[in-house]
Amino acid sequence: MTQATNVTPLFNDLAKIEHDRNVACHACSLYSMCLPLGLNNNDLVRLDSIIERSQNHKRGHTLFTSKQPFKSLFVVRSGSFKTTISATDGRDQVTGFYFPGEFIALDAIHQQNYQSTAKALESSSVCELPFQNMEEIGKDMPQLQIQMLTRLSKELASDKSLMLLLGKKTADEKLATFLLSLSKRFQERGFSATDFQLSMSRSDIANHLGLAVETVSRLFSRFQDGGLILMVGKSISLQNKQKLEQLCG
Amino acid sequence: MTQATNVTPLFNDLAKIEHDRNVACHACSLYSMCLPLGLNNNDLVRLDSIIERSQNHKRGHTLFTSKQPFKSLFVVRSGSFKTTISATDGRDQVTGFYFPGEFIALDAIHQQNYQSTAKALESSSVCELPFQNMEEIGKDMPQLQIQMLTRLSKELASDKSLMLLLGKKTADEKLATFLLSLSKRFQERGFSATDFQLSMSRSDIANHLGLAVETVSRLFSRFQDGGLILMVGKSISLQNKQKLEQLCG
DNA sequence: CACACAAGTTGACGTGGATCATGGAAAAGC
DNA sequence: GCTTTTCCATGATCCACGTCAACTTGTGTG
Image (cartoon, rainbow over all chains, first blue to last red; front, side):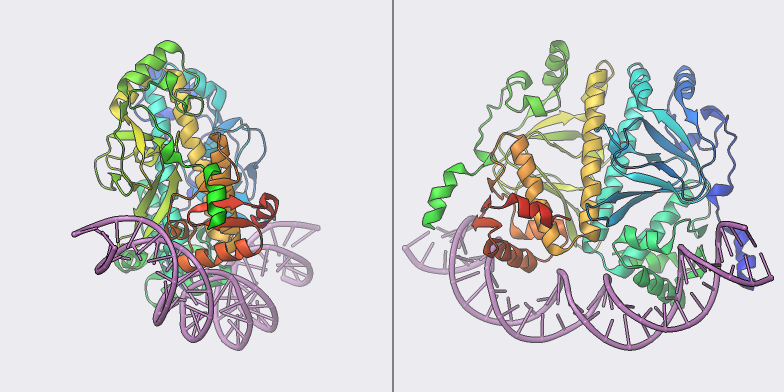
């Protein structure tokens, strides 16, 4: 525990990054990794005008649920979210975790309804993009359309990697891959690539990776014993990224 | 075997559907489920002009491989394809099977390179859409852009379902889900929903579902013994769709 | 701060499906 | 045609990970 106080200040906490609800895209700290990248000033203002910036959503708050009518796309502004889909018998699968600058609900565009359920993992906020309006302004903004295609394509690619993970990897490989994927995404956002908070529960992680909670728990312990990581509650520090990379397969 | 000759004429064989290489979109039998749907005549002609229609690709032919520079999207015109991605150690995952009217390589848009490898499962042909040109003409054709978004979103949704399958379902549920998904796609294309050819090998199926070949083989036998299906080589007939649906979970 | 309840850890044990092994059937090459 | 190779089926065995159970640690609430 004394160790914890040592380490904590370094750890990223995405919920701690306060965003003024009224901050426009051009002034947003996420600008460089968000949708508006590459738009000219006029277009940016127009995009800005259709965006609805949310209040804070508390941990556990449901952004939308599967079967609700599809109205808007969402971009995480602060905090983090998970999405899940359910089988008929209630089993569900965590299909993704979403961090600032990332889109939620892209899989709903082709339908009248959301395809999944999105929940905040911590205090979080989003930018809401009413899809009707996006279609409308998109007609005059080819650059925006390209951006959207790119975003969708990127999520597609990462979903395919997850298929490889779910279908072919062992438990160790799964967890190592997961940790490094988080690491990379934090780094892209200007945070430490080695020290961060896991905003999701062990059981969310287990579910996402197709494992049992107990297995994840044991693996964290083994990784720690092996000097790969250092965990204190939800804070994790990657001690040996090279070894983790070897483990990914 | 005598039974086989009885049944065979009914079975769909996508490779058998001959397409004149020069047939334009408006005259194509896939029109109603393909990209151009909803375009006006002018736009259709313009889209038509950038499409390069391929020769026949033989079974096993590689359309593109991962790491090759991304140049074009492809739409299956006849036959079928599989896509795979590989782990560093050579293990690979069949990420999808593609039938007439379906897009291949949507996950490559955001990168310079293809993210996966695409192989023909049988004698097949494709329409090639050079992406540069698509971007170009897309600027004046919002309807085309929407179509593209919709297509991407649809694949995203089906990938999420596959995650649920890979992460949470038992072997029986996996296979039942797979068979019904094929059934649905054949039906959408105007073919029998119950009698069709499996153009992919057992091992492709196993790989795609995160199972061993032996397991798939055993399951086919068990399904047949249980009166759920009737198989002769690569031809399958779904005898009890209702029971299969119950099995999906 | 104490109480209740959810989340996480760890051990013992069981099992679904992988792996290994063998033989037959179909397809591909010559 | 014959040979070779790949594909498929089925039985015997094994093991990675799930399940069950008991305990500890965190967390939110009045």
